[in-house]
Structure formats: structure tokens, C-alpha cells
Image (cartoon, rainbow, N blue to C red; front, side, top):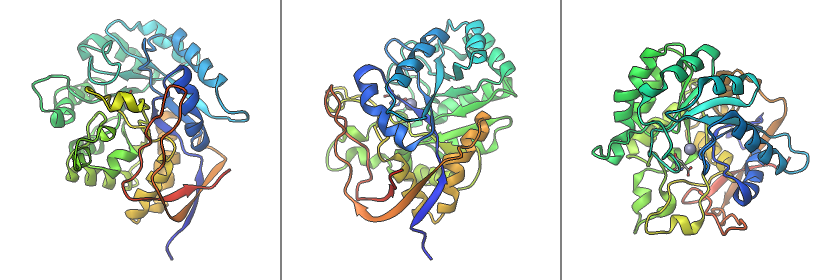
Length: 348
Ligand code: DOR
Ligand code: ZN
């Protein structure tokens, strides 16, 4: 009997961009509706580099939550060459920091203040290993000589593998993996290693960026890769391996900033991310494994409880792709599968 209804513990989003100000106010309800917690990325302008800044950002998020919401933002520290291990330690002890984010300098949106060489993080990583604070990594080399489609694989060999070896007890999450090499690394790595996988990397390959013309709304970083890589990601997501869990990388940019001479990287998928994941697991014949991926494995990795409350998803006849998401600053295009969306969350 095909399953057309599924109830699972409230999922969490282990990789999310909420921005700030008017954009934050506009996009937060989409995530707070479907997810119990989210790891909030710190790449604001200016970036969230201290415990004080993260605490203040958390308050701004909490103040904008819909009435009655018990959504919990989990804050991250944006690592720089000058991160103070004492501040990181104090922020973690105070319950402000849940993790810290490593952006190689210049790798992506608002990553200019990122880390210029991982060697500069030695005392920071020793501290994080010591206190059990997870390191979240944007895993792409910034060497302009490296082909843009190879940047994840090169980063894994040149930077991540040595890092994994040098800090054997450090919790590491390779964020938004896009390649077979990423999957294989995470499967085989010693020590506490995991990866998040986005809905868009499960649903599109790189052709989507060039379908009958240039498609700026299909551009994100790491950029979508060949079909073999998408298939490897789908296999990993539905494998039941607890090292792979949900992280949407939902990253709103105004339409005008994407449809531009130099369009921004990022896709806003929060309104239908959960439905997209359900669709992928359904297509793979592994709906029963969505619960682990969406609601259990990430919580276990971060040492947090699974939610008591639940969400119910139902299969529909297919719904047209979502409209733009309105914000006071202008519309944001919502990522949705090319044909139709076949799952929907039942209203709570
Ligand atoms: O596509 C992306 N957008 N990748 C990132 O790493 C950052 C994100 C953003 O902040 O827009
Ligand atoms: Zn991201």
C-alpha cells in the first residue's frame, strides 16, 4: 500500500540563513511553521563574530517569532582569523553558541571576513574540541585556479582530510554537500563527522542553471553538480546513515539581487523544504527513513532531544510551484521542483 500520510517528530533545520531586519521578519515564519529548531548562519553584514553579537541577534529573532511559536534559534559564531577562544568558550558555556562556522575567506555570500588559512584557527579548534562545540564547514576551496565544480572535492582533500586527522575528537559537519566525494568522505571519516544535505541539491543537477537560458534562481554555493553527484546525495540522504541529516541552506535574496549582472548565490526554500524532502524520500521508496533524516539524526549529533510534538505530511495530487514570497524589500523567489510539489504539511 503506498503511503500517503506520514507523521514524524517535529523536524529541525541544521543549516539556515535568516538574515536580519525586514528580511528576517518576512522569512522567519516560513521556518518557524515547519521546524522546531534551526542552526542560524552568522553571515550577516557585519558578521556575527562574538557571543555578544550572537546573543543580540538571537533576541532579534525571538522578538519576531509568531505568537505562540516555540521555535528555537540555535546560534553560531562566524570564525575569523582573530576569533578569541575565550569568547567562544564563554558563549558556549552561556548557551549562546551551539556551533561555530568556518567560511574560507571569500568562499560565498558575506564570507569576506572568513578564515584565510585553517592553520590560524589552531587555538580555536583546540578549544572547540575540548568543549565539544561542533565546527560547521563551508567546504570549498577559494583558489580561483580551481574549477568551480571541483572546489568541494579539492577542499576535502587539501583541507578537510588533514583537519579531520589533526583534531580527532572535534565534531565536524560538512555543510550542504554536493558531491559523491563529499558523501564518501563523510561515510568513511573517523571521529564525529556528519553532513547536511539541502532539498535543492537533492532535486536539481547543474543543467537546471542553463535550461533554455541562464537561470539565476538555480544558482547557489556550492553550485549544483552533475547528475551522478545528485544521485549520490539522494542515496546518502535515504540511506538511514545518521551522519547525513537535514539542512535546507534556505538563503533569501531579493529577486532583483539574483536577476542581476552579478547575481547572488542562494535559494530560498523554507516554505516548501519539508515537502521537497518528503517528495525525494517518496520517489526513492524510503519514506519511512525521512523521520531519522529530518527529526532524529541531527538532534543526536548535536546532543539535543528529539521533539515531542509531531508534524503530519500528506501526499497530494500535485500542486503548482510556489509563488514569490513577499517581503517589504521586494519579492523573493521560492525554490520549488520544476514539475509539481506532491507533499504538503497538514496545518497544525
Ligand atoms: O548559496 C549560498 N547562499 N551559499 C552560501 O554558502 C551562502 C548563502 C547565502 O548566505 O546567501
Ligand atoms: Zn548556507
